[in-house]
Length: 112
Image 1: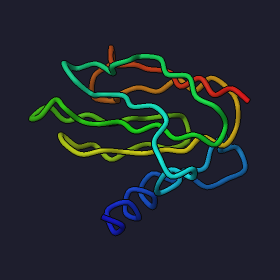
Image 2 (image 1 turned 180 degrees about the horizontal axis):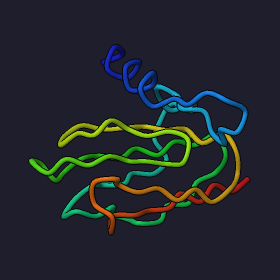
Image 3 (image 1 turned 45 degrees about the horizontal axis):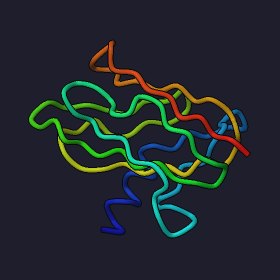
Image 4 (image 1 turned 180 degrees about the vertical axis):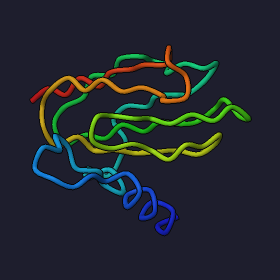
């Protein structure tokens, strides 16, 4: 499992100081704070609100349809099954989308 998470971390990271969040291989506080399902070609729920330092997990439940979770500065792999976890380290509103399905959008609101 750790190898998969490390691979996700390496493929999802972006370099540079403009990255608003750092992708973490797992939640920093020991658990996931919000879950988003990729199901019926949508993100459910479309909006999640968390606090700084908390993690969101996206779970693919739409096989065999492939999706990705793409933010401005990082993205999950494109896949039909599996999960992706990201810990948010700064407050803000972070929209994301699936680059394969233009109507598939979501937002993570991160509060202090």
